[in-house]
Amino acid sequence: MAEIEQRLAALQHTKTEMADQKLRAETAAEIELLVRKMTAFAAEFDTAAANLFEVTRRAFPVIWEARGLHEFIAIYRAQVPSTVEMVGTLLRAHASAVVAGSAPATLPGHLDDVPVAEAAEQPTPQSSFSDHVVKGGPTYGGAARQS
Image (cartoon, rainbow, N blue to C red):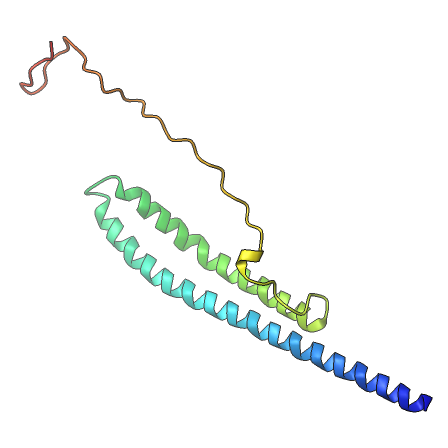
């Protein structure tokens, strides 16, 4: 009877290990899918950014304000692809750790469950220009002075 109980316990242990391995493999596959989606979306976004970069390159000589957007896109295109690659590498390393058993077998729940630092409220900028009329100044291009 003791031998049967030992075998039953061994079978139960094997069953538990197999269920854990299956869960870990599913989690690793989910992480790989996340990496592939992120990479695909980043490529699509980069294509759109390249188009916007060309448009803003032509726009900022017309209006100077377009230069800020142009420079933002240039920075994005320089930094985001390598960052996406790094995050993908880290996610794949995590998937390997999941399979090896050194990381939790499941991913965290929804993003709503993950604490996010809230952005500090920014003060409303105050203009350094005033709306009062300066009296008695010179005229420009025939404009009349305010009295």
